[in-house]
Amino acid sequence: MDRYSRNMKMLTQDENVSIRAKKIAVIGCGGLGGYITEMLARLGVGKLIVVDGDVFEETNLNRQILSVPGAIGNNKASQAKLRIGTVNPEIIVTAYEHNLTRKNASEILLGCDIVMDALDNIGSRLMLEEVCEEQNIPLVHGAISGWYGQVSTIIPGDRTLSGLYSGSTKKETDNTLGNPSFTPALIASFQVSEALKIMISRGKILQKKIMFINTYDNSFEIVDMS
Image (cartoon, rainbow, N blue to C red; front, side, top):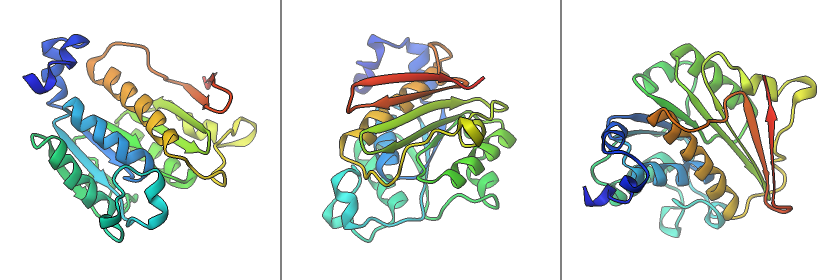
């Protein structure tokens, strides 16, 4: 229990035990996904599913925690599994070295309690929202670009991302701005916080809301998507 003793400062013993019984899928193991898997492993989530068909490139070294010179050319999901094994060997990790699609989603997400969106494009996010609704799984969304990021928690049926990325309500981060080292770490932290609140069934989640974070101006804006 020493590993999780600091969790006990904010969580009950029953909550700590319940977290170790959870299964969470992280879709994308790059900038956001690397930090998310690290935090979930240290938190003590019992089973992690990591999914990514991409390989590390030199341009990832500035911001992706799983990216190191020796990993260039390696699959991101497999590297996430290796990292989790060093961080917390108690965690059961399944790595899928290909992207999530409509065809394979049912198998990959089977039995998951939460899905973490660490993708990098709108089309894939909308597909993931639809799949999570069909599977009745809460989805924690995150997106980053430059100084900016956004977070939301989508409970099946909310269709928050569909509203965000359609018509006049569309407000997305601009992927032409690049990404520094700190933005993915910040947004991933908020995503893991949302996931924890879902797991322990307490705290206020960003349901039907999008939190937009501007680190350049040190501003936060929460937009109601109801």
